Amino acid sequence: MAVTSHEIVECRGSGRERGRAHGEALRERIDGLLERWDARAATRLGRRPQALVSDLVETTGFLAAIERYTPDLLAEVRGIAEGSNVAFDRIFALNLMDEEWWFTAPAEPRDACTLIAVGPTEGRPSVLAQNMDLPEVMDGAQAIVRYDDGKGDGGTVLTAAGMIGLTGVSSAGLGVCVNTLSMLNHSRDGLPVAFVMRGALAQGSVAGAAGFLDQVEHASGQHYAVADPTEVAGYECSAAGAVRSDPGDGRLCHTNHPLRSTDLDPAVPAEGRNDSHVRLAAIEAAAPDVATGADCERALADRDAPLCVVAEPGHPWLTFGSIWAELGASPRARIAPGPPDRTAWVDASPA
Image 1 (cartoon, one colour):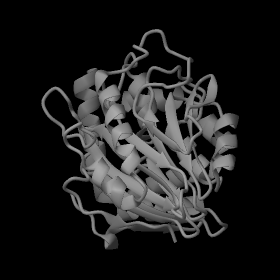
Image 2 (image 1 turned 180 degrees about the vertical axis):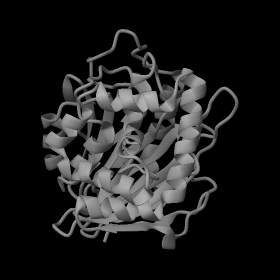
Image 3 (image 1 turned 90 degrees about the horizontal axis):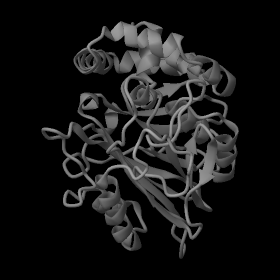
Image 4 (image 1 turned 180 degrees about the horizontal axis):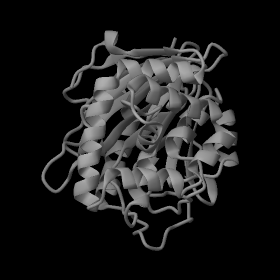
C-alpha cells in the first residue's frame, strides 16, 4: 500500500491526548487489524481471542513495568483505546506483539527485520535504516505517526494502527531500530518491546538510550540499534539485561540471531533461521556503499537476498515497511509504509 505525506497522523499533547488523536485518525485500520488478529488467534491457537487478551493483561507484570518506566506511554495506549472506541485491554494486547509471539506458544526463531547503521564520516551525518518484517496479518495497518508532547519529546514512528510505535526517530536527533531475537530469554514481568523502543527514543542521545536499555527489565529478546549525530551503537537485550553488540567501528548490521548475548533460551535454536544469516551477509556486503538515506533505499529494496521480503505459501511474513534517518543537526527521515521496492517513500522528518 502507498501512503502519501498528507496521511501522516499528527498527535500532540499529553499521552492521553496523543493517543486519542491516533485512535480517532486510524480507527478504521485498527478495526481491520483487530479482525485479522482475532481470526489468526482463533485459527492458530484454537481459542477465543478475548481469552488470549485476558491472559496477556492479567497473568503478566507488563502493566506494572510500564507504569514504572514509561507511564506516559501507558496513558497514550489508553487514549488510543478511547479514540478508536475499542476496549483498553484489546489495544494494550495489540501493543504486546513481540511478547505474544513467545507467550502463546514455544518461542521459535523469527524472520523479522534487517537493519544497518553508519556513524558520521567525512562531513556526512549518521545514518540508521531498517526493513521491518512482520506477519502478513499486519499488512494493511501501516501508519506513520508524528508526535509531540509539548515538553521536548517529539518524533516520528513507523507503526501499525493502534500501536505506539515499531521504529522511529526523535526530534532531538536520535534514531532507534529493532530486530527480534526470540532465542534470548524473556520475562513476564519485563517492559514490552514497543515501550522499550519509545522509552529509549525519548532519551535523545545514544548515551541516554544506552542508559535506559541498561536500566529496564526486558520482557522480550530484542536488538536495539541507536544512532545520533555523533555515534551509532547496538544492544542485544534479554531478561538478563543489555549487551553491547556492535564492533565499535562506527558501522553495524543486524538481523535475527545474536552476535554477542549468551542469555539463551535452551528451547530455541541459538543460531536462528538460515534466512537470518543470509540477510546479514547481504546487508554486510551492501554496507560499504551505504552513506546516505538514498543508499539505504536502494539496499533495502533488494529482492534477491532477499532483504525485501514478500509473503508466500509457507512463509506468511512480509516487509511491512521501511525507515531511514539521517541524524545531523536537523534530523531527516523517510518512511515507506509497505515493501520498499514497490511503495512510495514519504518525507517523515520529525518536527
